[in-house]
Image 1 (cartoon, rainbow, N blue to C red):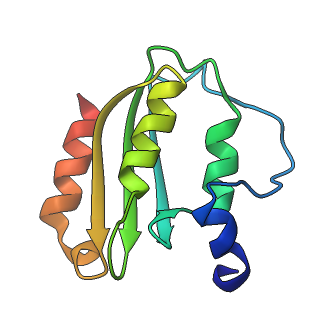
Image 2: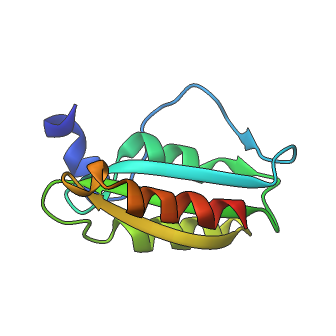
Length: 114
């Protein structure tokens, strides 16, 4: 998936996901995460971000996991969520080692509870 999808990730394109909208009207907060492909969100996450509906004023927390660098991923996630009308409380990058750091994960969870 990575080898064939990295070009679409770099171009911020989405994959076909089989649905036409994600309605957030019944949720107060959304937590969205993605692995990093070439410094960008994956194509499937790009697709999901593109079909968010009823998100104005909703709270969001974003995160990305990566091996080398988070690149532009968190900036892209933040902008796309804000463009959908959401209030982004925080954006967190977790290196492979940091995924084992419960302190940083706890910090993200705390943000989500605000």
